[in-house]
Image (cartoon, rainbow, N blue to C red; front, side, top):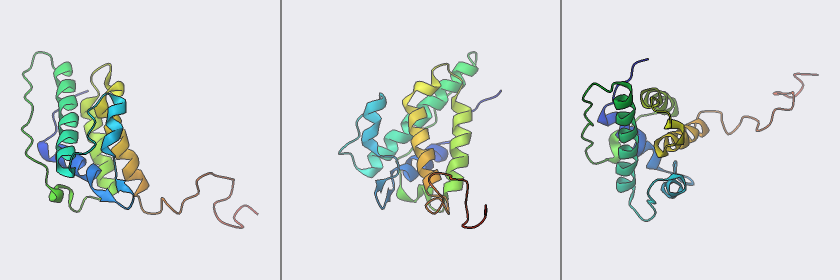
Length: 152
């Protein structure tokens, strides 16, 4: 298995997408992080929260690559300030694929599944799934019949 440090645009796009407002608030609400060992971002503006999210994701990715390649010097990329246009045009499918990429690059430590970065990535993934076309119309519970009369 190989791992690499994703580029700064990857971290920023995920972070900005997560903090963009939707009908019910941000996709990955900032205040939940305090429950998982992260900083409480309540009261911070969207840009600051996105910068924090990008930093959390980047640091875990770097930690993973350093764990995998202990004899290499692994530099952390410089992450510029978040801008709202950094995720323009990204669909939920793009976000899901980006989450998969980042998770693959960040999972080299034994405690990865207990980290704030993992929890944040799961929140982003869940938000993207909820935004997939047809998600709202799909049945919540399967009862043996997807279409009326199909199993008759």
